[in-house]
Amino acid sequence: MSYLDWKNHIVNCECMTMYHAVRLSYWRGEEDGELIIDVPVVPHSLLKRIWVAIRYALGMARGLWFYEEVLVNVDGARGMRDFIDQFICEAERSKS
Image 1 (cartoon, helix red, strand yellow):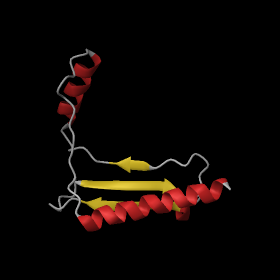
Image 2 (tube, rainbow, N blue to C red):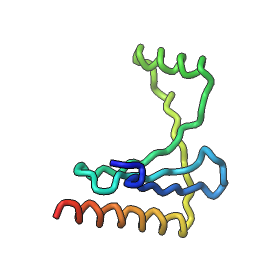
Image 3 (tube, helix red, strand yellow):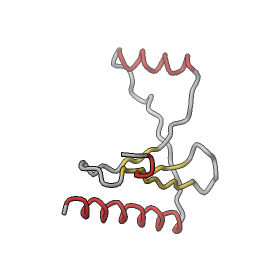
Image 4 (spheres, helix red, strand yellow):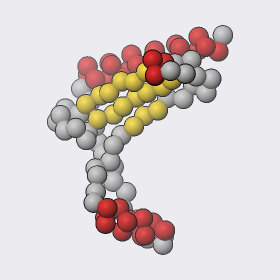
């Protein structure tokens, strides 16, 4: 597979913060037909990451997960829908 076979679509949050975005991607013609959805997590310092890892390893990780919300307007939702529809059509076409 080449880079040209890689399809992706990025939907930005209405707040326009660069960390609030969703990236949908897939390899065109891939047998597995997996859709990848990436949502970045707010970056933390190295010490904070180590502290979270230690607490996770010791089983004390409750409340340490960081979830990001992405607010998508109607145009963004339509773009996501169209991209997912394209992914499904190409996956079905490659199976037949």
